[in-house]
Image 1 (cartoon, one colour):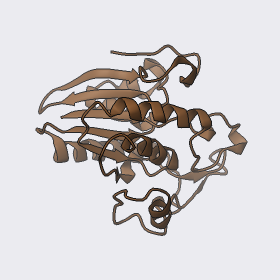
Image 2: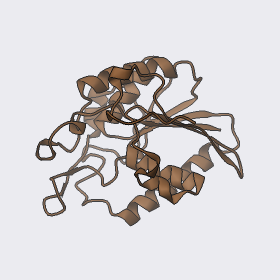
Image 3: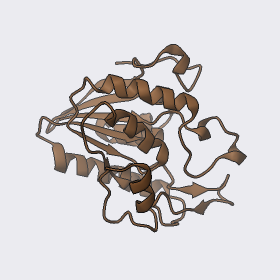
Length: 228
């Protein structure tokens, strides 16, 4: 199988001061332009499946892809941002929020396949901040899900997700714990990392690629593109 790990487009929270950030930000104006470029580029990949985090910025990014690819996107809650859907600016003020609800998704993103446990109480359901141990367990679940669903197939699968989770998944698959830090550089908005996963072999084909973006749409600014 081939697996594409895709970071969402720039969100409004990416440039807002910390005190003005919200728990479920939309794409920024630049982010909206980035995902259009991403969607056009991904039309040539021959994807068979696309899964997305339930945050609005990932849902918007996914929408730009399926505008060019005839697939039914599936929401996979485990692909969510590190920490969960949380408001507040520090550990003393963090508060769990509901996350987008089933009715909101059906209205804002019609046609998406929604898991049964994502109901009108939202997907995060006011839980507290996710711990580091819970994040590790979640990354393991995603790896297990991926292998169970697709290993040994010729599928081309896309996960639309977030930078921190992407690092943890790469650390699992490549057995390189240092990827969890910034040791490999910043992960770009709409950056694409591609893995070929066979039974006992994982090959990194592409890392953090933004070849689909013009230079003025690259964020974070000031970083050098990494492409293997």
